[in-house]
Amino acid sequence: MKNLHPALLSIISGLLLALAWPPLPTTFLIFGAFIPLFFLLEKEPGRLRFLAYVYLSMVTWNAITTWWMWNSTGPGAVAAILVNSLLMCLPWVALYNVRKRLGSNYGYWAFIACWMTFEYIHLNWELSWPWLTLGNVFAAQPEWVHWYQFTGTSGGSFWVLFINVVLFRQILAVGTHRKLLIRSFVWFMAAAIGIPLAISFMVRAFNMRLDTALNGSAAENIVIVQPNIDPYQKFETGTQQAQLAKLIHLSEQGIDSNTTLVVWPETAINLPNGIEEDSIRKNYFINPVWAFLKSHPHIKLFSGIEGYRMYKAIDKTVYSRQIPNTDIWYDAFNTAALLDSTGILTRYHKSKLVPGVESLPSFLRFLGPWFEQFGGTTGGYARQDERTVLKDPANGYAIAPAVCYESIYGEFMTGFIRNGANIIGIITNDGWWGNTAGHKQHLAYAKLRAIESRRWVVRSANTGISAVIDPYGRIVESQPWDKTGIIKQAIPARSQLTFYVRYGDLLSKLMILLAALLVAYSSYIFISNKYKTT
Image (cartoon, rainbow, N blue to C red):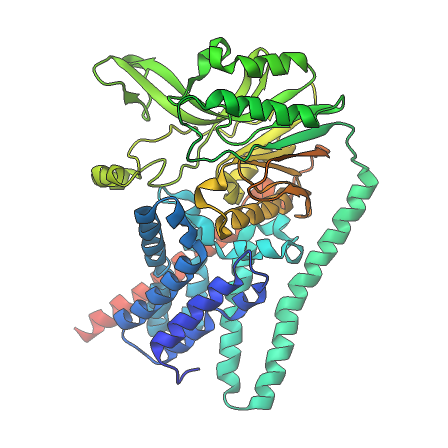
């Protein structure tokens, strides 16, 4: 492999990363995906040349895995792929520099630590796009990672990086001795993959025995509605009454005397200009919803709402926008709400906004006019910082609401669980991307949230795939893509907290500390040597 052209090594690495990704079943390819780039580094290229080939590899991976964004926004897709690939080069800069200054052993540990530091930052800053967090790759094989209830996806990222590094170093150590190479490879992979798999199966077996002892069966059931409404026609004037009629009709088909909760997808309740949330009960167009809930007083509705709230200038928030030529300001919300016939009982406003589509990072506000030309936004939705749990004392459910793509944020979702959520409710609309890998990846990531929190997941997706996922990451029931239908399932509420929920992503924080120490030490050596030469 060391004799291959650098461009070919780069492309091979990008292809291995892409082919390992959900929904493909070839997850095992991830354990060698970085090795071609490590061989490229052994050729001792210059820094810029090395990073150029790394960038080619990252673009290959990002483009093949997330090309489906093009179906929603062409310029946005290109920008996301190019920028995300560039950010992924930062850990490789650390590898190159630390390896050159301190040697390979320090260099590769710096790479592992800096990659995980990058992933953690990418989960939490304003330009967040953690779709390709390495630990997400096991969403296609959730039975491999039941220990995510201790580590979250950062444990999977460490597993991938560690095996790539150690396997590569083993290959270099063995050299051209083919028999020794094969023997070393077999034993190493048996240990490095077999041990985590064995731990996963033991954790799963322990959880199953615990669940059997607790005997947590549920008498009540939840009805999940998948209306299959074209997202590009959803907000057209005059279509809302038909949409509500369809949602109510489907709900009526599924509910029975044991149904206590009905779930509708993201922005299921909407009007072309949004809905004033504080006066929603008086809104004439929403009357069918109140009539439906009044006829079923034992049922609560968990639904998405396209909402807003009005303010005078003195009361406006940092997210507020002014109505032209007035003294009135407003916040727009992508809301998840729990409703009965009296109106909104409790609500949560989406916090994790899609960069460029729903919000623009503060450090990129100068690009606002350009973004708006291509369908982006400089303001978008207002967000909230609190993890509001949607609780219904009557039926016992306390919902951790995940709106749109919020369910890809593992540590973020644990905040709802610590606040008392006993089930996870995902309401989303993946129809913008069409029938591509996008909605399948999004569904797969929800399995990891179930494992991390040991909670049941109910998922209502406008055009699919809606599903019920158990705490083992198994899809119990689902409705396929581009179909109208319902799911009815008894869902037990759970109160136990996993280690990951209690303490968060400790592994990433440890790696951040290690990255800081290694980079600081290598910088000190670099500056010291430079000072000596002068």
